[in-house]
Image 1 (cartoon, rainbow, N blue to C red):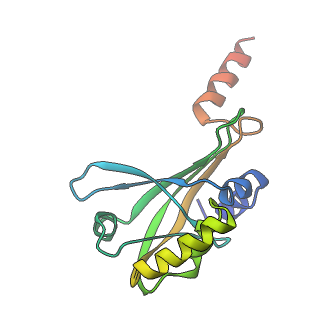
Image 2 (image 1 turned 45 degrees about the vertical axis):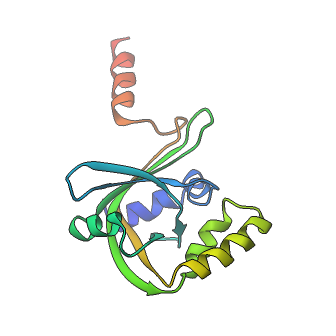
Image 3 (image 1 turned 90 degrees about the vertical axis):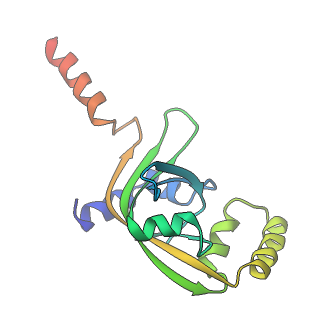
Length: 163
């Protein structure tokens, strides 16, 4: 999938809704022991890449340094479901202090009062953080109105061809 195709899908209204929604992504990677891991994680979308942040000595950082391939799912709880699937690679960068994008990403899931207290707490806690910048290499939007999983669409097409 090329960057133009990726940008086109990420710009769709449902994709934008999911990228800026007040819920975490489901972030998957391969741990150092070879086992798959999936975690909920807050993120910031800059219009092209996703960024998330973590403790520099975390197991996640060590695993991603060895294997930077990741997958994320952003979705809704309603019907019909809206799902944005993202595969990509991660670039790790150690930063001093708390990056502004981390503070912004927290605001999506808190009230203003909660966010003020949380911001003060994280700025006091973290001397440095690792920025995980995710560059999408493949994306798929499933809105179950205009797009379906390929196997479901194939089944529908086969049934319609039968009569």
